[in-house]
Length: 262
Image (cartoon, rainbow, N blue to C red; front, side):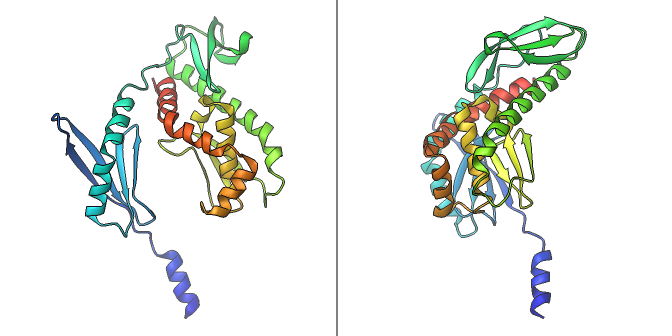
């Protein structure tokens, strides 16, 4: 009977988050929208901003009044972040014209060279050269750029990973690069490691911190003090790198989105 109860518990479908869009009217008459999500998995109230706007995550134990007080207490921050978001992402890739690319915390020169086949390669002065048939579709050029960023990311991870594997129970099962709205990395139950492609726009030390963070989840799945001790033993400056992502992460994600989606 006990085994049957465990089986039922494992197969019981998860309760989906409850979502509601709130409209807030500011003093100057401006309206802003915030998606309120009551998430059974959440442990604390959290306000975030991504390319789709504001999101208020509410844990099961928090009341509606708690959520409202939290939202209004953080309203100035929310408005500032939304204003910043509105000014980001306007640097689309223009084939044959864009002269600079963000890479590893710097703006590197981008050269366009007429060619029969579309491709991309490192160039002089730490720059990048896109071999460009003028008739190439812009979407194809963006795909080549995305592949370049991923190749650079895999090269970075390949250099760093041997340093951190000792002391871990196993290596990641596989490593994936994706564009995400809010996450910088994640580790699945089967050991697959996902990293945000926008990390290639950040300084290398910040990218390396995110890799260390996710690798330490092979030791501790939570964010307990034990987990953070493992992170700090491998990356003593992790707080500074995390703060940079909080301050500049939205801009990095928006910049990459503009480059890769037009």
